[in-house]
Amino acid sequence: MANTPQSKKRARQNQTRFAVNKARRSRIRTYLRKVEEAIASGDKDAAANALRAAQPELMRGVTKGVLHKNTVSRKLSRLSARVKALA
Image (cartoon, rainbow, N blue to C red; front, side, top):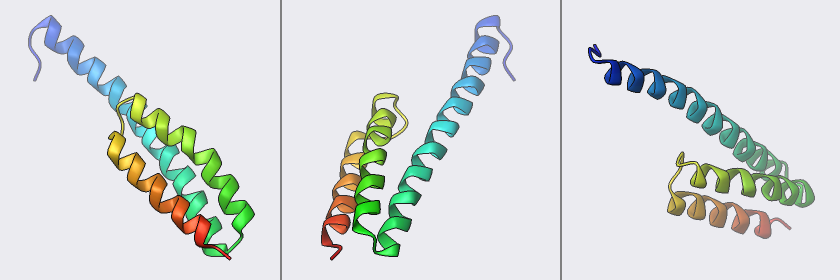
């Protein structure tokens, strides 16, 4: 348990940051799920639009420190290849 005033404050800040990051991660997963569903349905236009909407959200996750830059790069690359492969 936190004893000093500084450690109590850090514990409060960590709780707040955890909640913010959790919401941000959940939002990113929702965008990714929409892209996956569009790909699964086989609708190339819907998949392309969903991917276009997901890209800024993923990049925001990088700038906010929720995800690593290379992770997002890899995900975007794989998703865009799958969208491109739709006939």
